[in-house]
Image 1 (cartoon, protein in one colour):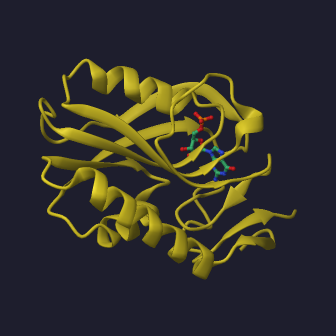
Image 2 (tube, helix red, strand yellow; image 1 turned 180 degrees about the horizontal axis):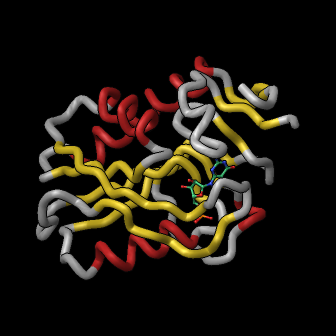
Length: 173
Ligand code: 5GP
């Protein structure tokens, strides 16, 4: 890896929190037509673990977005790189994000998906950096609140690297 990474959240701490979120989601979505929308690419690891922690029948779909270039600052422009494969009308949709930073990405996705008449639309994010918020967004299910540091691992990248680290850490160039 080009830069060392200092650990912030261990794989054990993440697994424990994912288990708790899974139990909470199981209780809230029981008996509903439930779809998890994995927001690519960053949330692919979280969504895979979360889906397996929810003991319910559910569907999974993928939405590709890109808001950062190869740097560590948001460009503020949200590009949709891949749309959902099926309509979501009358479906209970849970948007699964890796991190809510400025809030611009999730706000954009909420606006986009609302036009498709889902039965409900909620947000689950593994991480939140409240100090960086540029727009208020509802996070219905949250893993961890973190300081304003650029984090990598567990799906999160820097210039497409580090996604396969099993823990979350801070880049220390
Ligand atoms: P927002 O639109 O809320 O500013 O940013 C959302 C997206 O920016 C996230 O889904 C993630 O891809 C990226 N992002 C924001 N903060 C970080 C960070 O600390 N590390 C990494 N690797 N990506 C981040």
